[in-house]
Amino acid sequence: VDDQLQLSSLELKDDPKYDSSTAPSLSSSDEDYRPEVLVVGASGALGRVLVKRLLLENKVRVRVLVRDLYSSTLNKLGSGVTYCQGTLKDMESLEYAVTDVDKIVFCAGGKRLLQEGGKSSSTDNKEGEEEWDALESML
Image (spheres, rainbow, N blue to C red):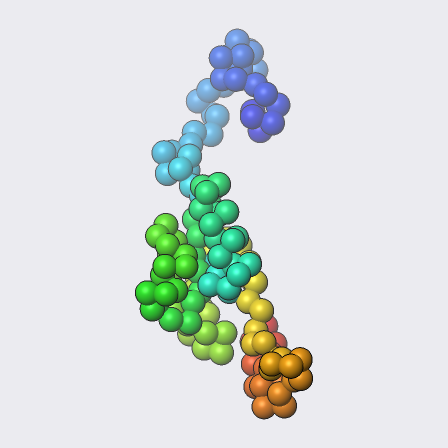
């Protein structure tokens, strides 16, 4: 509140109504606290950009949900993130991934449903619909 009112502790000390013994004190862990954000779809095109931006701003801790921990995935996202391996179909991996996070950013795009030539595949389309139905039932 003091920051919003632009009051310093020196100005408050002169105020007769101000009692420093009742003022809340922040521990060093409170001052260093950064919220944690889970990015689902972090290895995709949009997710990679978002993760890199969050890491550069250094205002949040970044956790990502990835299907695999192969070197190609790790190279895409780099260090500085917490990796959770799992899929959207696996409830246990989802529960683990969302534990103690403050925000969730969902930027997973799902499977591409178009084959070469712009025609959709009925097999891919059915698989995609099943995946979205499974995800919807979890939410």
